[in-house]
Image (cartoon, rainbow, N blue to C red; front, side):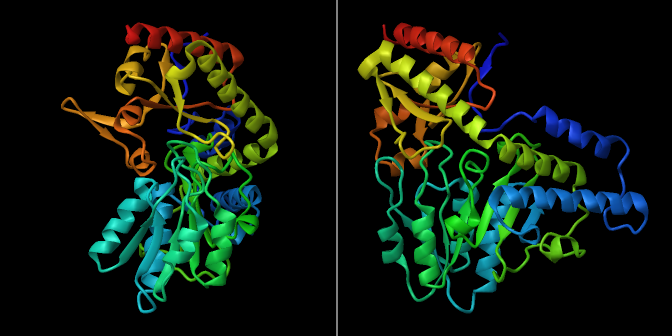
Length: 380
């Protein structure tokens, strides 16, 4: 068994072999500019449009509603700033949550410097937004609601369908960052009721450096960059064909293998938790609500043990992430765990373990043994 065992799939995923194979011709021989009129250009244009269709099928939208970007961060910026610019004369109020990724919160902070008013909704102790709080926060000048689909740290799935219905009733544009959920959950833009949805390629076994933004028909959005007419002028610049091909293939594979992958990820996560609890008992504190959580995500604290100490102790065998940052000997708790009102000791002891679609029983059993031994040694 190869070590260290990687259990940080919410951070990034390896490129799926099928995806790498699909990309190879565009690295070696298919080098044409999609905007060129001759054959090698037209064939690359066809490859981009094929990928657009592959992405659209995964989230149940029309191909022309998919716009390729460089990453989820760019998609979030285009969605939030684009809607803000389009509606600046109508209102300057945006509603978001207190557990969003920095790719959302930092954009909102920037807009607040330009005179926008941002409402950050509270969450419960599992990190869930209450739709009633969304409704109560709406004002006459509210032009955008942006709430993530699933949290990257604790895995909590937000009530996007209910929030979408509220947004629609009040004629407010609704965006969701689905970087963590696409490929893991049934992400259907019609069922969710969203106007914009963000996709990250490297979270679903495609390369880094590619993302997409769903923009529903009729949603008016202003571009952030100016140049050529690529992506209908919303994202000008020569297309990154090789990575676009990669994310398209990754979406095709994710749709084809969805049920199998979801079962495997959840089986691995649940087997891991069961093994830890059976041997460590009350020393294990689960932060996630596993009834409403990404199938691969476990946010867990081991009582009285620093997450950084634990992650470092096992790093030769297991790769996991922590819920805090350590600078000059001081531990800073993540805004997500703070918003969930976790006490300092629990938050400082929190690690995130996220399984992948290829995680095996053998790997999980090894991880259980390694973590249990580490916790027992560090508890002495």
